Length: 132
Image 1 (spheres, rainbow, N blue to C red):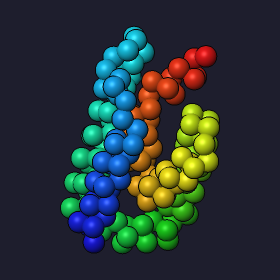
Image 2 (cartoon, rainbow, N blue to C red):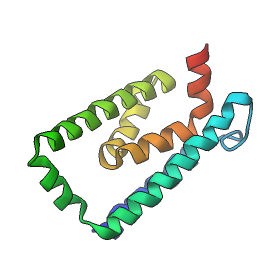
Image 3 (cartoon, rainbow, N blue to C red):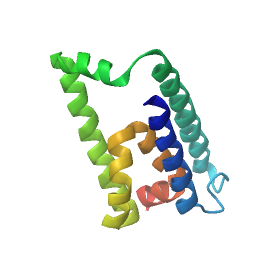
């Protein structure tokens, strides 16, 4: 199951990069674009830690244990409220419900791994919209 999960993530990663490719994805375009390297670094560190955790514990058993606790349920609700806000940011950045729909399932399944990937790929356009 773990191999399947990470295989699906790898496929999602490849598709996200391929369909969003632009020449400036990994380039510094302005002084603020240094932040994209920070986001990519956080993404890679979080991905590495997630894979490590996956090798040590069963995700579904851990979620089941957390769901028994009030704080565990609160953290889950908090996570999915944040992910919903991420989908709103994707809509505001892209202006397309189709793009939001394409990111919905990966964000639902992979949570902040997908969120960090979106922000890394689209860092320049998000920052430029926030500053304009």
